[in-house]
Amino acid sequence: MTKWIKLSKENQKILLIFLSWKILLIFVLFFSIKFVPLAHTDRFLGAGPIIFQISPELFSWANFDGEHYLSISMYGYKALQQAFFPVFPLLISFFSLPFSNTILDSIISHTIVGLIISNVSFLLALYYLFKLIKIDYSKKVAFLTLIFLVSFPTSFYFGSLYNESLFLLLAVLTFLNARKGNWFLASIFAAVASATRVFGVLLFLSLIVEAIQQKAKSPKILWILLSPLGLLFYMVYQYISVNDFLAFYNLQTIVGSQHQSGIILLPQVYFRYFKLFLSLNKFDPQALSILVEFFTGALFFILPIIGFLKKVRFSYLLFTFLGFILPTIQGSFSSLPRYVMILFPSFLIMALIIENYPRIYKYLIFILLIFMLIVESSLFFRVYWVA
Image 1 (tube, rainbow, N blue to C red):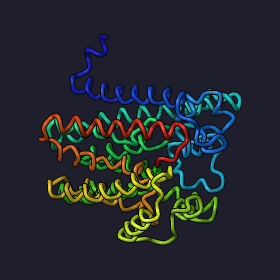
Image 2 (cartoon, rainbow, N blue to C red):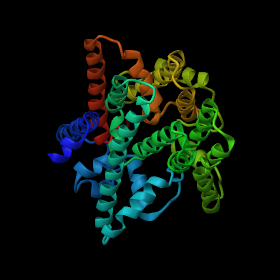
Image 3 (cartoon, one colour):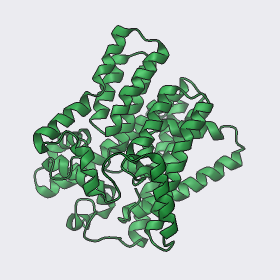
Image 4 (spheres, helix red, strand yellow):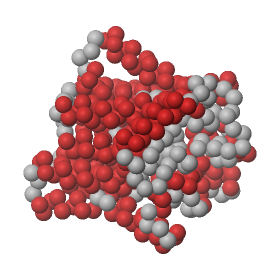
C-alpha cells in the first residue's frame, strides 16, 4: 500500500490502464477456453498440440508465431524461421536457462519468461510513451494515446509471446532519448530495435530527420550511424547460416502465400483487396480478417496525413508512414492489424483527432474498440487467424 501511495497520480493512472487491459484479456482467455471451440487441434497451438493441452491458459498466449519464438529460444534457428528476428528469443533463452532442467520444464519456463518480458516491456513502453508525448502535448492527449493503444483490437499481442511490446519499448526509448539530445543512447536503442524487428531500420531514418529538426551538432549525431547495426549483424548471420543476406525477407513468399516477390506498389494492394471483396463469401470465416486488414490499410494510410495537418513532429510521421508502407510491399495487408501497433505516432494522431470530442463520443469509440478487442483476442486464443 505504501509503494502505491508513493506513485505519482500519473503513474497510478498508467498502471491502472495496464492492469485493466491485462485483467480484461485474462477474463477473455478463460471465457474463450470454456465457450469457443478450437479452430485447429493439430497446428498453430502454442508449444505444440500435445503440450498445449496441459495448460491452454498458459500456452494460448503463444499461438501462431509464438511457437516460432519459443522454438528459436530453445533450439536456435531452423529452416524458414529467419523472418523472426533474434533479440526477443535470445532474451527468453538467457533468462530461462536456470529453469530448463527437462524438456517440459524448458517449454514452461521459456513460455513464462517470454510472457514476463512482453508484459513488463509493454508496461514500461506505456510509461515512457506518456513521458515522450508530454514533451509536446497535454496529459489529456498522452492518456488518450495510451487508451487508444491498449484498446486497439489487436493489442493482445503486446501481452503474448510476440516481440511487439519489446520493439515498442525500444522505439519509444529511441525517440525519447533523441528528443533529449542523447544521441548515443538513442542510437543504441535503435540498433537493438533493428535486431528485434525489421521496422527498427526505420528508426535510423527518423533519427536523421530528428537531428535535422533539432539542428544537432555533427560530432554528436555521428552516433546515429550505429542505428542499423543490429539489422546488419543479423543479415551477416543469415548469410553465414543460410547463404542469404535477405533471408528474413525472401522467405516471406514461401511461408505466406499472400506475399509476392519483388516490390508491389500500394495502389496495387488496394486493387487486390477490391477484387477480393467482389469474390468474397460473407459467410467465409476469413471474410472478417480480410475486412479488418483492408480497414487497417485505409486508416493507417490516412492517419499520417492528418498528423501532418495537425503538425505532428515530422520524425514521428516518417516512422509511422514508412512503418505502414514496409509490410505492404509484398502485395498484402496480411498481419497489418498487428504490425501497425508499434506505430505509436498513429495512436497519438487518433488522440489529437478526438481530443475535443464530447465525452459520450469518446466513450462510444472506446466501447467499440474494446468490443472488437474482446472478439479478436478470443479468436486468437482459440487459434483462429486474426493477424
